[in-house]
Image: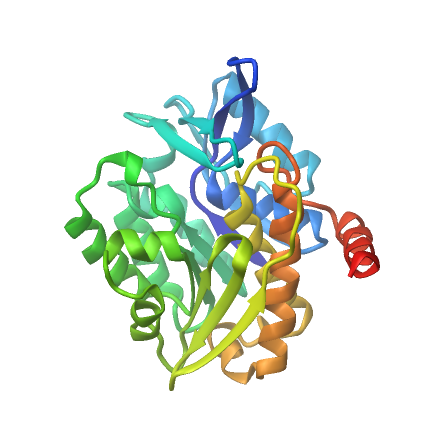
Length: 317
């Protein structure tokens, strides 16, 4: 079982006519939906509001087959994200998160995740950055680190206005609590301007920690302890927007690792991965992210859609 833990929010996405469309989102939620649509067993652990948006979030999760037994009901309102799109489909975000449901975790609520003892725990994005909940999530990671594979998606949001020095310290601490770290080259460049992102990523590796760096349309690479690096190319598509692309990449990667049996041994699983296994897993994740980019909002593909897409791509090439 994989658990994706973090925020469940509403993305208000600007349409070409200037109006905004409300869609269910949040990095860890998007990852959970991706895993479920690809046939994986996944529970979402989040604090979901009792307001109308919260009802819509629950409907989305259940309709996609995501487990909801770890969800904590919350009296606080749902977090809102406003996404404005560039001509190329890139998104800039602003947030309404003061006093909202996602960050008010209690030890008792998170204790239910520990009791489940999942094969993998996926964390990151806003919930890893915003107190008071982020500190409790770190405590959970420490508790599970010896038995559970911890996947951490940095997914930094400069629009939050947090100090770079503070974020650098936080990220360095949270990297040390993970076995798979995923970061975009933009994430790393924001933390360490003027430094090659791959040099920074290499400094984060450890015998039981792999660091995956995504580079948008160019592809992705995994850096392993000892200086080994494995690259895979991007998948050319016509981009509608990039919302949820990184989240779906993480979901695709975890599903690929699970299908290959590398989550069965928890935190030690990735030590057995060969270069060929990493190439297969990263390539699968890239196809998932690419297909997500062809759709408006965070709408990852089903396994059938991904198979059809792979056939179409092979036919073109």
